[in-house]
Length: 109
Image (cartoon, rainbow, N blue to C red; front, side, top):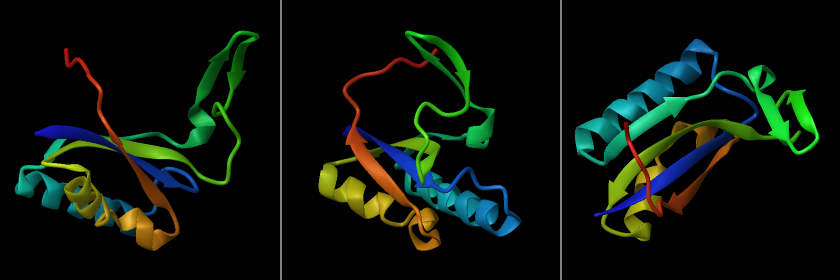
């Protein structure tokens, strides 16, 4: 089965208890379905450090209305199935969105 990265875009990483509960519930549903392979929440974008040819700067790589707040890897038979699965992400109902991309390759230590 193919793997897909689901990038979660939001105003920033979830810190509100209700948002965190919704994301935890969604992760448990994905895990129970057998589709979830890995999931990671990111700290708020203010904690980011970016590296560029000109040096190191504090903050995210790009200042944007929405940032990558987390990501997960899921397995699905095809892109349509991956989109259906990712469409249940609670961030969509909270004003954010998700981006689904096929995984070309990877490594897990």
